Image 1 (cartoon, rainbow, N blue to C red):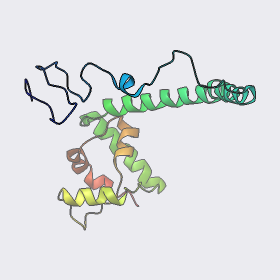
Image 2 (tube, rainbow, N blue to C red):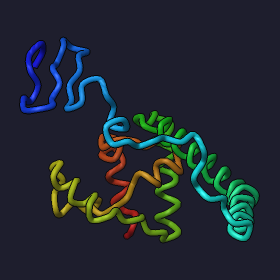
Image 3 (cartoon, helix red, strand yellow):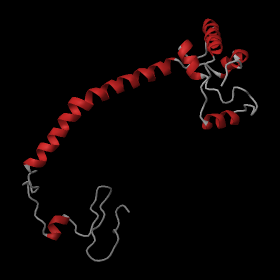
Image 4 (cartoon, rainbow, N blue to C red):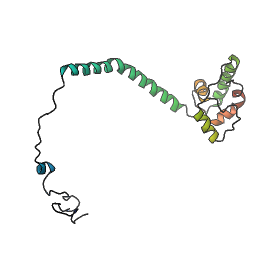
Length: 169
């Protein structure tokens, strides 16, 4: 409430405009009311040397041993993210032909296609895939990324359906 009395009752201040005072002790802080005296002095006891040495040794281990490994993993993850971001496009005609060759090599060697997770099967069914589709359980994106450096789209899958149907599971 602007310009009126706050909660009312004894000891409550009056609100004076937007930046006014609202509280039970007009003009006085909670420290003044309670008699609390603040100290600028650090009241936390020092960390014992035995504990401090263990903490510092752990920090050195993290920096010298874990740090470089973590940095390498972060670099690899960034590279994978960049590769995936660059691959979110349709396949070029030349890439489709190259992918046909890769599919044929896999078929000749008997290398089965990877399977998708059940959650992906569920999503595909929700998007209108037929339960009897032989490609319903096939994970085709890793094959496309490996062969063409692109994720491809469902229309690319449909273009390659005859070849993909011959890759065993």
